[in-house]
Amino acid sequence: MDAAVLSTRLERLEREIRLLRSHVRDAGIPAAPADRGLRSLKGIWRGVDLTLEEIRDAEVRVKDSSQ
Image 1 (cartoon, one colour):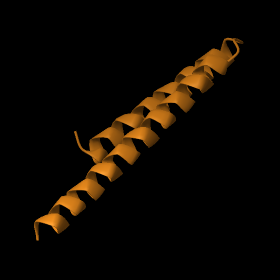
Image 2: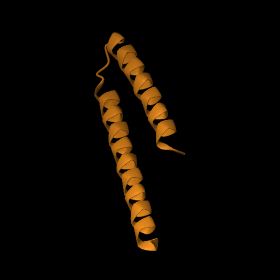
Image 3: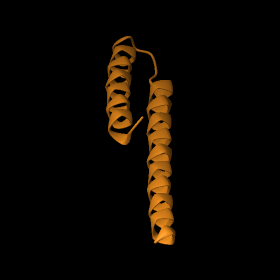
Image 4: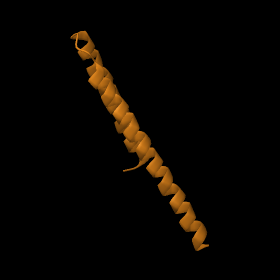
């Protein structure tokens, strides 16, 4: 799965969490769990992004070493 697909999925999840948070707020229930969920998703995405960067760096190193 490439970065664009993951980014699209993350954006969709963030929209869904914001929608759920608004429903929770309208119901008068504290939204802290939804906020924690959104922060977790963003943390996961940062980890995926860093991993993709590490993979790209490794590919460059392999190409450089084979020349």
